[in-house]
Image (cartoon, rainbow over the protein chains, first blue to last red):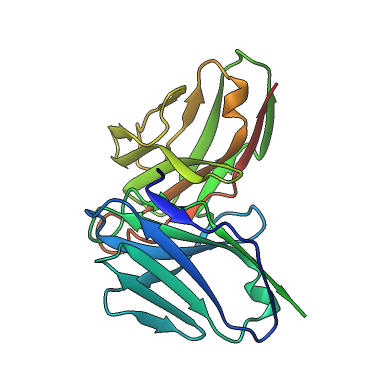
Length: 111
Length: 114
């Protein structure tokens, strides 16, 4: 079983839709959690960290459920520019280091 | 402001050939790592380094060697290429401690082994 698992999608949604991605991780020792974004086989870039209390960054909301070992990312009011692959990432260390990536969820936002 | 420079961008090898993927960063990052990305598999950690002279294995180290003689450089060596090593390779770096969640990636190397 992979340490970090995501639904690979693709998710095809119209502009303005709300879409949610889920991610589960198997190692209960995981300490920190992130979402990265990757455009069309380019290098991944950090989208946001995920905090225990949940956190929001504009149209993006991340949630963490340590008991269920589950992370989510919600995107509201989807834009065409949100089309990308979203990577769920965990680390066993408090602030990062040695990041373990999920296989990614592909999002395609259509006009 | 170069960031992480990774070369070459594309490479075709024959089975059994050796080569080195180069990675250099100019941000004085302590942490550097190599990932490979295959369809449906996500990024998998090959090797990483927490500072000059220190390296360690990741999830999929077999067939690859690394060294870290300077803070700036972290080359990845394939000693005897195999078709299973056909992949996209990314080098990354970050600070240790605070800020280490933000990996700075190179632009990737598309490697094909025939």
